[in-house]
Image (cartoon, rainbow, N blue to C red; front, side, top):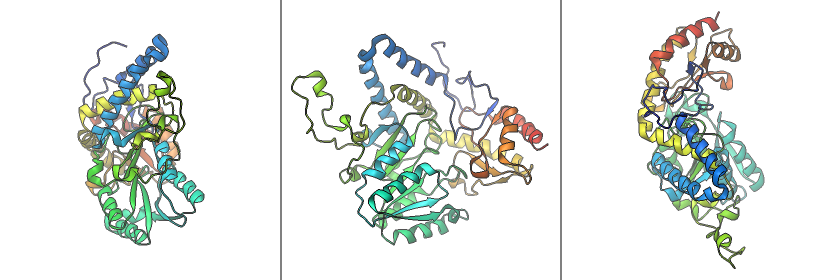
Length: 396
């Protein structure tokens, strides 16, 4: 790897010289690492190889920088963020630490990715909660019907609602501001899974009225698996009953490692979101996320979102002309960073995916749809002709 790396530019793959697929459209699954991300991981590993535990000082500085960058991309304060192993870790932390009372109601959405359902179902089983589902289909014709159905559940006395910022199969960006306002009106709290949004969709958590948010690094943040973060609104922290606390959750957790007579078990749990950083974490994955965030912040999530949707604006009619039925929301405000479409009659999503991959086009097939998920390095001028040819060949 050379020391110098070009600056990131929308539609430019120069930072991805190892990517062999001509059109990589599966960033909603796993994003390939850029050269700066690879370098950051290699440097962190080399630091451990050369200095072992003496490399911890540099690692702690990297984590502090990562927390600052996460604060910039979310609009949150650094102290309101916990570094986690991924979105599921953050969801579990809140699901198990929320101050539930037996009989409380919890609102979920039918059609969500299971990562934002299963932990809540386990909490319901453990704490005696009632789970209510709002069908995501109620939002397809517009926000009004879906929000009315959601508010009807809140009126029943729900304590918390959990939703994805962008739905994994349809690409619909949910009306977070309106959902948050309804929760506040009815005394409920709002949890958001942002793994299909953050990095390619601009989010300002305090302005949206979000109470909790979890995200993993390996999709639109373009980091690596094994890293993520949890946001906790500061007003909500005191009521939580930390169920995933560990030795690093205490105040002055390291003191006994450097001073005599400090080994105690009665130190209070920290009252910051970082209390959920309970034990050792992957410095390699965090270094990857730190590096990838540097690129995303340089480009800007709003610019990335606009770039991706210009790409999809050109792709969508090509799909329609070949018999695909787009599920992309008509309202531009509800468009996430990818496009999903039902395949033409007589064609299975799996067979289409395999045929496209043979032509060097990587897509995914969630829940019977074909999902096209470009990111900032994708260039429509370069890739769409190859995608057109691959689609025609795949359809026979």
